[in-house]
Image 1 (cartoon, helix red, strand yellow):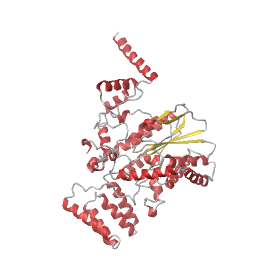
Image 2 (image 1 turned 30 degrees about the vertical axis):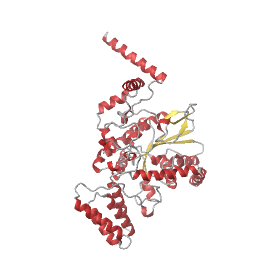
Image 3 (image 1 turned 180 degrees about the vertical axis):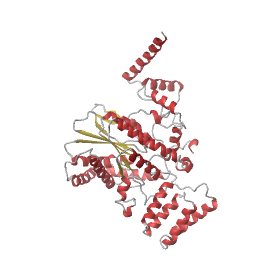
Length: 479
């Protein structure tokens, strides 16, 4: 009798959940924070009004560009989903000049008999942990290949992300399971309405449903300190996220490849330098004086400038700008390998790491090697096309975003890797020449407003990296 009573109660709940799903009640939770890292179930793609295609949901358009693909997959269709951040999306422009579009254009030339669909899932400021639910979601859309390009955005939410990782795993998992139920959403929304409780966006222990980058806020740059980066936890989380992506794809028998994103080394100084905690005020002053003297001497006495800058890096190896200035001085002496190493050290010591660090890249390379996942190193690719082999403004329009030509070169390199892994068959041996012509025609076909909008976005991005975001001030707990 007791068992029957329990089953009767559960059956009533099951009927209620079924009714909610049929009617659409509670289809979306009003909560915007609690365990969002684990339980954000809002889909990226929804059906269009005529159900003919899937398109990016309106409530995701703040971070994702307009994108769509047919709801019914054709017999000769090959679908590639590309996941990542703004580099994938094509910022500061958009999908039309992203490597995903150039990849689709080139694929049409290598085998015109196939209907190629390259779907851009690049979210502005999206880190690996925010990509995981999308990677899982896209299994519903009959993918033939996954491409993941991630690594630049891991520190954008470095404080809130590491706080979320400290949440109880059991509690988070339980919440995640409940959050899959429409009935739970309905009850949760009703409770919030009755209590007039607004959706929380400032809970210290959990991530918001959407990106809450520190630089989006007033004073965001000031909040970046070496101690606040939680670098080891970020690296461990990045590794875990990559492994989980591999498991998701492998379970569905979907091929996967990684892209190591490129960084501007030559023409991008560190966004924030910070002295080591062990460096006293007197030494800090000496370093500043050496940097100023080197700046004055760089054009007339490069040897003395280099000597001063080496001394500054020895006084405090953690002060990023010293390494960057040393790299520029070494370039003038044609000491290219040393300059390259100095630029990389400057990037790695940046207290506001908006570019993938060497540790994160090593993590990506190791995961790819361990799990035998093909990897295309876009930084290495663009370095080969850069003066002295050091990527700068000639191949990147800012600190991380490739130029149109670089996006095209990445697309070409992806096709070479796809062929090497027997994922595609090249029918047209002259595809490179034809694709290059198609690239030019495509870019020429874009309206002037597209380029004007991109240039405006680029200027906004530069202000953003300088800590001039116009969002609300960061909460006290994140300062």
